Image 1 (spheres, helix red, strand yellow):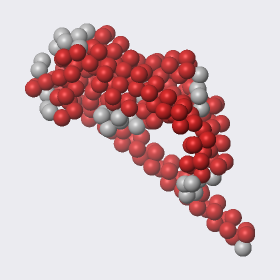
Image 2 (image 1 turned 135 degrees about the horizontal axis):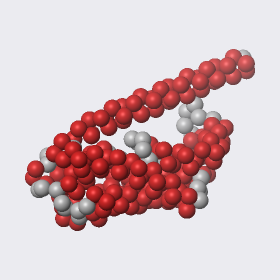
Image 3 (image 1 turned 180 degrees about the horizontal axis):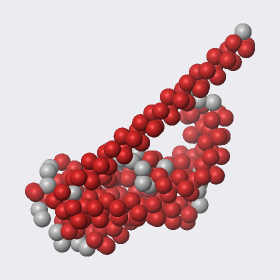
Length: 213
């Protein structure tokens, strides 16, 4: 297979890198995708499977290297969160409209209670996949466990898309179409949660204003 057989842009660039570097190239692309989410893994991972099906590297190599790339990207975001720290996050959130300091405390308690599950399942959700590493760093989740749950979640997600791309061959883009539906669902849920949060905050503010009056 040649990168010329795949449409240009991100797909062509990714295939060219994988052809040149093999499995490590696939891992590098995924690491970049984790730090810069606009590069969609729903495209990159099936492409890695497609490239593996053409003999550039093995299916197992594709899974191992992309999982390693996911971990490297997640660790970069984890350390960014750790560098920013809780105090800066609280100070920034405190300047946002409709955000109460108690909201941060509630979020912290939730993450302490469910953080490991959030990291594991978050690796399988569009958008959340990259973002979840930042609060893990802010809360200084034990690094060993962060690595364990990130690796497990990433391996499962990556394997699903890579195997699909491997067996679909030139029809690898079918995977992207179905993944796009999942992404829209996640976005819709996120928008609904934000809307609910704003409504609750506005109502609470009005009640406090009426009580003061």
